[in-house]
Length: 513
Image (cartoon, rainbow, N blue to C red; front, side, top):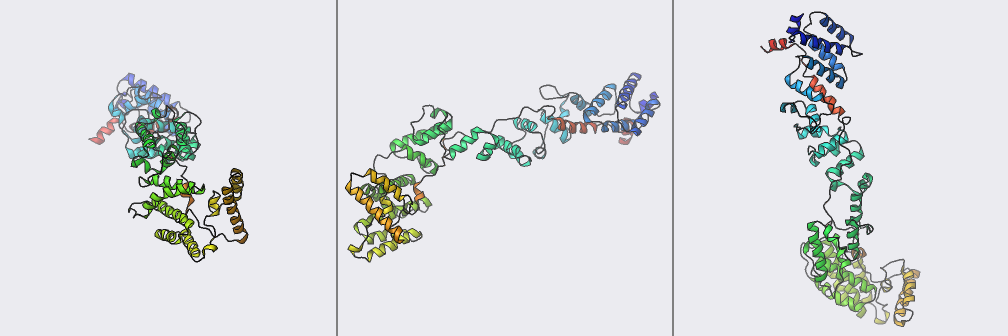
């Protein structure tokens, strides 16, 4: 009998006794395959068969992995020689329920090597096992979220791996995107995540009033409205934000800003609220200066302040009549057209129809309103002086945009304001009669401006320039528990069971020789 065990690599009566005890304990597990139990029992009752190691391995393969590794540990401690040295060391690691880095010391460096499932388990435990980027990407779709978060924190998974693309749950896709590429998180996703920091960032950029509270978005929202800057605002900006903040406030004093500021149209609403021009604006300084000068002209026009309009329009028209640079944007081309349309409107006051038409024709006939105004002027040119209608657009006289349905309400409001001013009252009453006649007769033959009133309305959206850099969303899961790691551990155990020899060491030696 001893010779039989020796043929299987088992030496010494104590070792044989210990191994027989460990195998007997294994056979006591309920539900094992009967034919395997019967064969092993025959080996235990007499001379062991050469098939014994393979049968023990087969029985281990039928057990739940945790139970299998426990019995495997018992067999190895009893002296079973049917395991590679590396496999033995791996079993030593698996003998711990949670062999996390910092809690155990690995028995050797070579333990870090092995099949992917084994290396991934060790990596998830914080050990420096090597896992390729391709292998990691393949695994990220099914890992429990706490395990994946551990790998993120360890730097083993990054944005270049795009793990969110392989998750089925929308909530997990949003969460991983927020952790790795927060700039991709939109407002709705921020709300779904309950990520208030990102949600407020989007609300600020969308132009909402966030002046309540004392975070950076509240302070910047108040700053955008023109309120006195909070003393703490500058200190809460990034270094580059502080430089920009200083440049903006200095520009308010000097009435000029660096090119990178005025080129950011999302900053124009901030500049507009903080800057009160000291006099006429030089529109050639920048597109923003041109816009502000044109905006002032339109507001003054609606208020009937024609002297101011003419003074500011002069440099605007001079600029508009120059040859525009090839890189002039669409907004600049549009502002040039608006300036000429507005100046042509004022030419009508003195019946200078030829000049008005010339200004409009310089623009071209690409816009239908321009052609309508040219046709209006041509009709006026054919009339005798005493046949000419009053030159002003009655909508504009009442301070509303052309075609506005609110003109009558506006007239009622103005009547109260100019009750004691005969001239102004007569002007608005004349405008009312003309509009009533136009509605009655279906004939509103008026010079129209502007071409596009939206030009004078700055977008609500705010610039990101003063905001701090986007920080990833903080982790929301707890460190992975043994339960979270259970599936990875099971796969790792399976790889270790594969290192249990199915044939006696002597047979292996014979095959190799």
